[in-house]
Image (cartoon, rainbow, N blue to C red; front, top):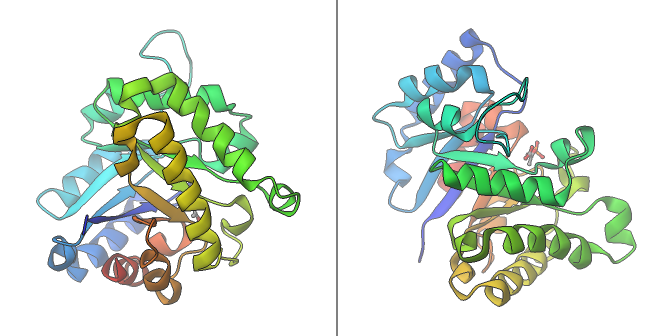
Length: 249
Ligand code: PEP
């Protein structure tokens, strides 16, 4: 059985004091006991990267950013490059989160370019895909996530096998509505087949589910054949909940 991956997405939450408290709780939860079965990471706002990496040094928890520029460097005011994120000790970078696709009009191609830039700097991109409620109701789920994934596959070529993909139905993010294990598994199986068709080795890409994962639904979701872990928003801000979800993996 391959290791599960559980990633927290703090979104735009936190302060130095609140982060210290949250990390203290996570360190006290001692996730190293579940390390043989799962990898755990937290994706934090850019300004906190260095401090969070330092605090988690020597623990079983790694760190990532929530976005990264598609550009390597230059006159791109406000952007943060993969090299900068890497220099602060991050291992992962989320790209294409639905909040960025919708509030910042990020296109499929921009998300793919961000994934490529992250890989070029030694980061593992966590590529988010997912449909809105209207798209699901119009039976467009596979068309939408297939299109989002294809842009990444076409841009990365053989490097597709180096990414992580997170299926996050937009209607389940922060809403308390979770895709049922069967609904999530069906989309994950579709994504697995698409990955395999694009590039044989990409069949092993970790596929995370995200969308209102909580301690009481995590185990059933993670037990599905093609669900390799989770991307956790709200529940990653409470140490006991996040630790319980990591243990469920
Ligand atoms: C997310 O932001 O990636 C997410 C899945 O959020 P939540 O767990 O709060 O639904």
